[in-house]
Each structure stands twice: as structure tokens, then as C-alpha cells.
Image (cartoon, rainbow, N blue to C red; front, side, top):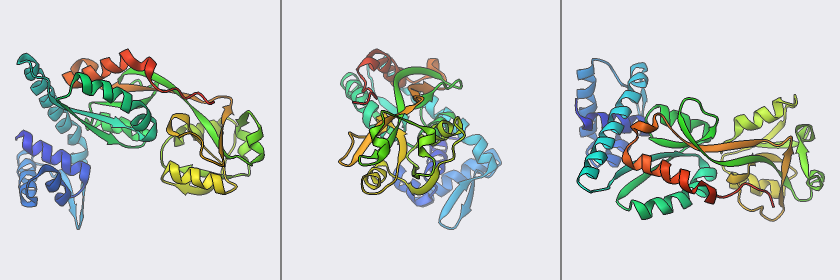
Length: 296
């Protein structure tokens, strides 16, 4: 068993395609297939199901993937530690991030400082919806990630407090209110987005026994905002994920308020690579400089 075989397995699991994995790794498709076959032969189990144009993990593959990723993370950490012994600070840092909240609001100022201190470290961002960051960490696809706290499965560093807000057409009667209750949404055309915060929105409505009338679904926040501005529809989103209100749109607090604390998480902080430890330490020092979710 080699590190190369484990890396090929991990990349295949992530990309779901032999051709995409070959392109990402810079080797031939037959080389990818041969390495995986050797690994499966040595382990004595099938790791992937081969369907036409698509591959998925077998049950064994699902169980063994976190182990493979853990070995690869520890290899990276070992190489970085050895580099520090030689006075070289280089390596790869993998961070799981969710959408605009962390990718556009929190990461840029932190990465700017990190790059100044560690210019030789290559940073890879794995962007998923907020609920999926946990799986990236548990499967060892990322060393650290942005999560909504509390999250007892990880070592965490609180960073900022965000809040859910109502997103309304500026001409809507609800726009005249300072705060919007769950009951105020009853009977109104509601927009759902796959961009994240879905479970937190559901809990807001469930706490008041309200079932919103979902008329529309969008993948992107930008599409949702455009539709709110031009149609008689409303929605809820995390304030840090939203830009300044576009023309025709207003944001209003919810009643009762629905804050959510965002932090950085790692499976075990004391086992992180030097690059990941440095990033978490930096985030702890400079969290007071991160953007606020306060409504103007």
C-alpha cells in the first residue's frame, strides 16, 4: 500500500470520475484505474462501484475513506513538521467553508494575514453548504472547517455571531415592521434556497408551529435576492451570507432573534499540521477584526 494509492482513492471518492481524477492528479486514466485496483487487491475489498460514467463508494469504501484521509493528513503533518525542523515552512492546508458567510466574509481577512505570515503554504478551500462541513471534517477531507456552534464532536474556536434575518420586498407591508415573527410568514409565498441555513430556518418556524408556504426554490442567494426584489415573495437568510440590500429589498430582524455562532473546528487540535494550527491560532488572535452581522 502506498500514499499514492490512498491519494488516488481519496480523489476518486471526491470527484466521482476516473477521468476527472486523472486530470486533477496529472496522471493517465489507466494509471488511476491500475492504482485503485492494486489497493483493492491488497485490502481484499471493493472500494468503488463502477457504473457507466459514474463511480460511487461501496459500503467498505464509505468506512475506509476516513481512514485513508486521516493517513494522508498525518503524512502532510509529518512533512510540515520535518520542514519546520529544516527551517522551511511550506505545505498544504485544507479548509472546509460554507458559501458566502465564511468564504466571502470571514476567510478573506484571515487568509490575507495567513499568507503574509506563511507565503509558502498552499491553501485549498472545499466549499459546501454549512451542514456538509461536518462531513468534510469527519471524513478527513479537510483539517479545519467553519461550523455553526455548538459542535461537540470537534475542538472549536468561536469567531463571530451571525443572525437569521427576514428578506423582504421594500414595498411589502412587513417591511414597515422592525422585527418579523414566524407567524407573519403564514400564507406568504416563501422562497427556499440550497445555499444553507435550512435547518436553522426550519427550527425558527417549528418553534412557533408555523409551516411556510414554499412557492419557489433557488440554488443561489443572488437569484433569490433578485426574485424578492421583483416579486411578492419573502425568505429568510443568514445576515453574513447577504450583501448590502439591493434596490427593492430590505432586511429585518426576526422575533425572537435567531443568532448563530460561527467558529473554526478541527477533529483534534493537538494533532493538526503546523499550517492548520497556525491558521487556528491566527483566527483566535484576530477574530475581533472579523465582519459583524449587525443590521444598519
